[in-house]
Length: 101
Ligand SMILES: [Mg+2]
Image 1: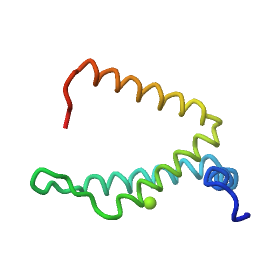
Image 2: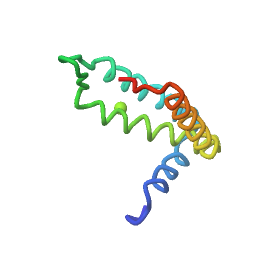
Image 3: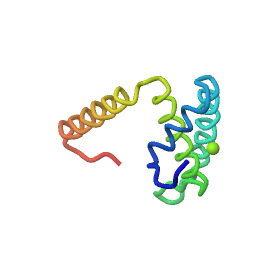
Image 4: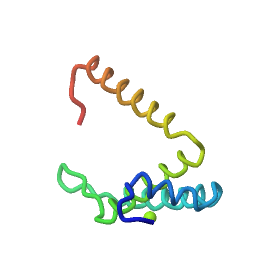
């Protein structure tokens, strides 16, 4: 693998190396690990503090979700869903007329 490859190319290479079943199991593991970190968040005064390892687990989950979308030929579908859901939420916020905390 050459050093000039983009992140997308590298994640694609990983997704092509492993089976769909293998990456679904790995995604389940990573989701559990992220769930554990998020659940360990502690409320201190008015602010929530997440464990330092949270960000490593966020990265793992993003990498695995990207791979399963690639393996199933659904990257465009996921992109469309993200745009739809973000736009819908922006509309709701505008209609709501107040900022949620
Ligand atoms: Mg992990």
